[in-house]
Image 1 (cartoon, one colour):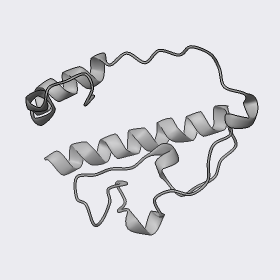
Image 2 (image 1 turned 135 degrees about the vertical axis):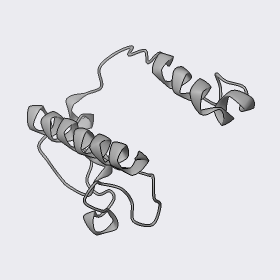
Image 3 (image 1 turned 90 degrees about the vertical axis):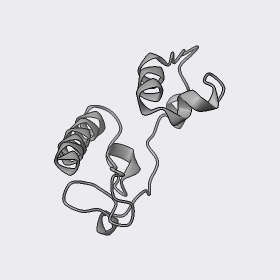
Amino acid sequence: LWECLPADAIADPVRLAAAIKQLPIRLTAPRPLAEAISSAGGVMFEALDEHLMLRNLPGVFCAGEMLDWEAPTGGYLLTACFACGRAAAKGVLAWME
């Protein structure tokens, strides 16, 4: 985004959100299967509250492969990432109230 937007747009939450939603991601070719395996490590669960918000950075939420967990690549991993994303989104909504 730093390459696409002026600094004042980055500082404006409305313009920044619009730019993120419109950011094109062009895939030119798949990577080899050996590189497609998910990585290990991430944010430890002890650093998160029950809504997946960082205890030391209120308002910052984590989900999916940001978390310190290992899961098989493929459908199970995608399902777990989507579920974590949903839980974090609910946490965001609760935090904003």
